[in-house]
Amino acid sequence: MPASLSDYLAAERTLLAWIRTGLALMGFGFVLARFGLFLERVLMMTSAVTNQSYGLSLWFGTGLIVAGIVVNAFAGWHHIRLVQQLDRGDLTHSRGSLEAVAVAFFLTLAGIVMAIYLISVRSPTNSQFEKKKESFLMQQDKGFVSTSSNHSVNETVERLKQLLHAKGVTLFAVVDHSGEAEKAGMKMPPTQLLIFGNPKAGTPVMLAAPSIAIDLPLKILVWEDAQGKVWTSYNSATYLQQRHDVPQQLMQNLAGVEALASKASE
Image (cartoon, rainbow, N blue to C red; front, side, top):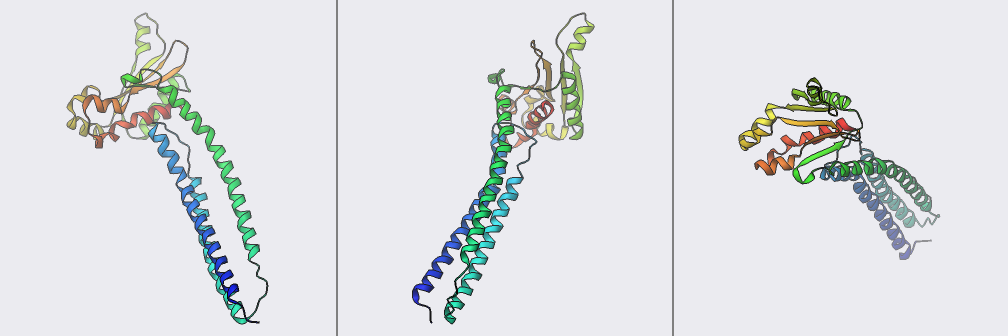
């Protein structure tokens, strides 16, 4: 028995439905693949630094994009097969519903995995936002940024030394203010100042804004307050830019101090 026009139209509607499903998978996959980049951008905008990787979102997103491509390819192949069956008058029941159920289960599994992933990154991200919020409580209006450290003054200083060495940055001096005070018969909480820099990064800045030489090399103060809490403090890059009219294109030469202080304080 030959197929009617309604059969061909129904097959075409089914094809279009599968194409929409494939496009939706690819679109959602693209958004998901960019999700990790979005999180990193948000953290950068708040000057937060994290060593957490959000690369899993790229893999999840890429997987969904591939799934969308497979769905569209399968839909085209299945439609051609179905039309050929209709041309021959073979009205055997199509098993298209099986593929639809498979896609539904795949999306359910993907949703569960993504929910677990989002929960796993939510807590660390929020804690870092809170830590960054706390770090700006002290003299923010003066360009002086303080980040609480999870280590003692000596441990934080050693971590900073290791980071500077790993990045090839020259450590010019470590001024032990509390140690010098002790030599003079006075007592103060542990306080050390690290002076460091890289001539290749600092020289272009000083050529563009000579007055910044008074604030270079860069400095990080590691100190303990009256309650025994340890802090890493430094002049923010934005403050230095505004104070000395540093060109925007050279800001990256000053921004490294924030990453160093945050990393050493983790």
